[in-house]
Image 1 (spheres, protein in one colour):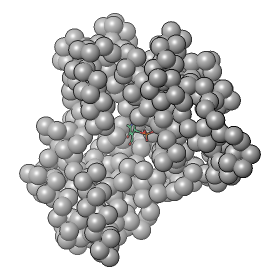
Image 2 (image 1 turned 120 degrees about the horizontal axis):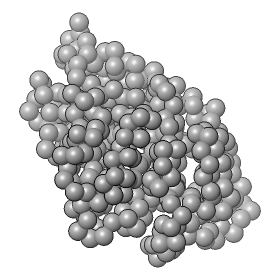
Image 3 (image 1 turned 60 degrees about the horizontal axis):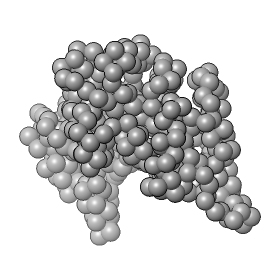
Image 4 (image 1 turned 90 degrees about the vertical axis):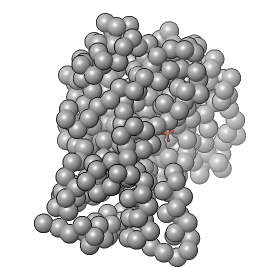
Length: 367
Ligand SMILES: Cc1ncc(COP(=O)(O)O)c(C=O)c1O
């Protein structure tokens, strides 16, 4: 956020900025979703929906699981939320009491740890590293002591690592055996570059799954997401949602339902990400930045820059000030070791990525 602020300030002074720091699509919502929102503004009253979301959208999300993953999900288990963030808030409050011990993957999305801390939950870092391809293993979990819960994103932010079916089965079996509540954040599903992502719900429908219209559906600012939960959690989550939020945005829900039919338009964005990803994975190693996360999914490459700096925040500052290249330092994702890492986002335009690479090559050379 600090880098985004500095990049915006630089741009406001008329200097050029090439954006590899932003974790969101630069594209608007799909055109049919925007048309649906326009129509809803003209014709609908746009009052509250039920706290769990519009029944039509809940049915449409349930159908998505059958269409995309071949997994049956009853619409009653789908809860529409205020983005993936709203789903995390509800999941954490419904699943964990104050004082609980919940594992979060490091490096990982910082808001999990901040939300859990705000709710009085003890955050237990579960470290993954380049040596193990940034993948979660049973051995790592064993070293975390007694846990009440575990939060995993697949694909992950910032490494793009994805848990395959076998990895998911192993993590799920471990959690079941240890009586650990597993929450899987699938917000980057749809943005993958090899095998399609499988949903954790196909492994065990006791897992709480979080998702959102923000990333694949290119609707960050609409603030609409969802979760799928076991039947017995629906009622407590409905009560929480009713009291905390009353309901998700009705307008956003109308647009989101239409967005689910716009795969051709949305897959074209994924093709652009794919091209940007190839540029980074090809050219960063040639300038000596060789230790890169696999970026199986999402739009991030997490890179070791320990040979260039002992403080990636200072390095990012100099890339921005001297080269006009905005990149995120690793400290947010990994407070302990993140000073030797940066996250390159390739969500932006091809021009952003190309010019940023040219400028970095100007500084570090190319082999
Ligand atoms: C892993 C992960 N989960 C959740 C979120 C929050 O998403 P939303 O905009 O849907 O609230 C993000 C946003 O970057 C994210 O990276």
